[in-house]
Length: 511
Image 1 (cartoon, one colour):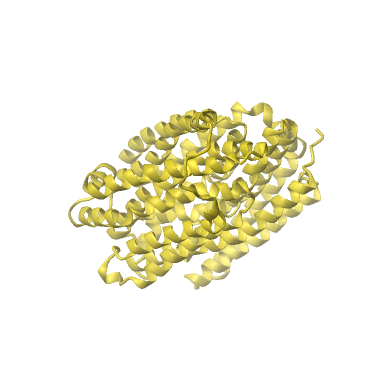
Image 2 (cartoon, rainbow, N blue to C red):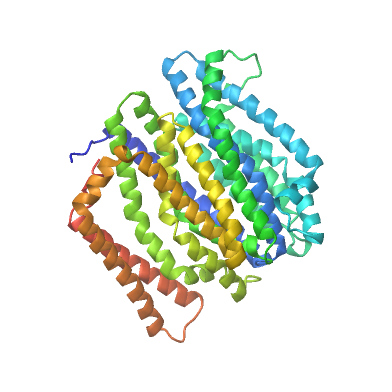
């Protein structure tokens, strides 16, 4: 099948923006790992990390809630109004500000007054000192929800205007300030000292965005039509239920874990942080950059070009993340030990974290493609389908978690999560199977080449790992892990890419 070429303009813009964002996100992710490394060093997988993780999840749930509702609804309306060139797109922006700030202010006030009830509801396993610490930390950190929620809208508008760097810089500053806060606190005095750092980090993140948008904010009467309001609400309302369920899933996971062994929340959090690295570095960056382009192609009625664009992105992610999944699965213990084993994070903590990490690796490919598949639906103006599928899958996740933890303890949480992500992505792809003809044509034409290359990759990873351990039997720790991980990554990936290139399985990326 003949593929469609993207315009040189779009190609140039996407590549340029992606490279810059990947660099900033890499640095941001390094700071994110710095946070986890400091937590691991000072507190290991102890009770204080369980509390910090549970409370931070509650706080960040506001951010993710508004991001997932506002992005697909406001972005499309904003772009439509900007295209009409009547100035109403900035009224859409201010309309979003007023809704978000008023909503989060009320929610923040209620949580500040009743933190005990929130902790009892979402971390029911906390008792005694853990419960007191959780309520104190929540009350201190909750004000950051207002700044974080506001920053979802500013981030989306900047992305819509192709200013991709400033939202990424905001995230970078957020992580950096938390790192500074963790370095500054006295570990002997506990985790409470980090609360002020989270508040400052949230405020500075928003301020970074407002550097370019401050002059667009106003407090006058809005000059926005009822039709535009109804359009925003019409796109937002189907998302509300889905996002509530989505955020509820993560919070309930912590609630389940709080009733299990000490360190369950912490170890799952550490494992998930590692598995998120490649997702944040590339697929997440791609989803940010391509969403406005997806939306523009959709609004312009360029259906075939849009489908070809989707096919290329998915093909790229599959070629990249399937071997990475195998690499992580084969080297999981070495990865966790190398990253975290120091200070209070002992051999028991390594084992406690390695097990959920191994399970998360099974879903790595699906975590990657979800970012692109969902924004494709949103770019078509279809917010209902991903929401309905998401709600069903979250219900599956909750039921499976409840069943699994009875038999395999805390490992039931990552296993249920992976299963529901696999179901969700396959479901969404099947519903759009007619839009995936470009993708299927790629694999039909080069299936044998792909199978040979991935098989050779796996053989090399296992063989080199075994060879390093045989040649260096008396060497342990950092040197062994670094040698094993680097050797079994560089050589197999080079051979894998070489085979794909040699037999022209990479020609589709000549866009």
